Length: 380
Image 1 (tube, rainbow, N blue to C red):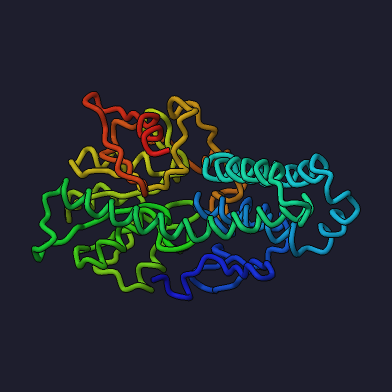
Image 2 (tube, rainbow, N blue to C red):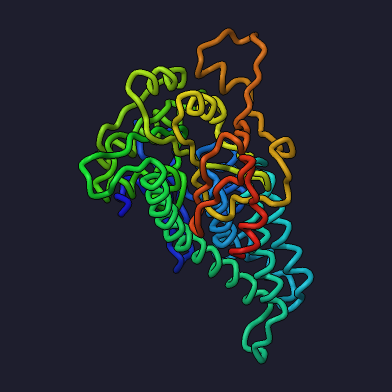
């Protein structure tokens, strides 16, 4: 169970009210930011005060729920409309959803969550209740109910990812769960409780191994330039007393595998394409190449909502570029140096051993590519 100090957010559905942990301050300070409207939700996503593909989607939807049901300015704007004018109310809500979609472009979870919510709203508009509620009430309630459902579903899904990931790694590495051996795992960025509603994806696999007494060590790359690995993953490792917890600089991954060894690399994902190409935090591609050179299996752990069958390959992914100042300041570089600061890179599917979702593990075909659409069709 996630410790109180590892909660990425606090949500009260009775308000509703939402506050999120400012992850830019971790580990030095734990401060929660109030999210009263979609503007505040957009801001914490854009500035990376919260991050992680699953959490971005959840905060966006929870923020919308609070905005529509508890924000006085929004309520006043809705009061000025005909509560049964479905077209006007729907357009009002959709405008807020479109705004949230502009916060960060690479993670597909946000877009999938908003599309899922839009379908639920369309169903709510057409729902007949014998005049007991207005269209406005049904739509605002539908947003709040679905946001709460997303919160609960994420934790459940993450625990399934952890379990299935653990089983796949033990099977592929030949490590017997009844033996005294354990898995030496390597990861990058932060994919734990702080990147989700709880438990985590890639770091959730480490948690599952730990709970089964099968985690020998967990090594986190610092993840420049935002240092999500050193600030956030290292914080989670220490707080939960994971065995063999170690922090290394990004450039030490190859030396680690050669000198100390590793059994598996497990990373998260912001988008997985139809052929298995995967966008994740910058530096993931480097790590995959290094793992391949040392015959260490490389896994992607991400929720089903991260699978994007509409994009054929990684070349179709829009890669977010962050402001130059973020790299210059963290690197203490000359202020007038030219900077290229992509937030993500794309790991080719051929370097991936398996894509772990809550509904199963996608394995590569004989030619090394993935048929993600077939998996999605099977489990949709």
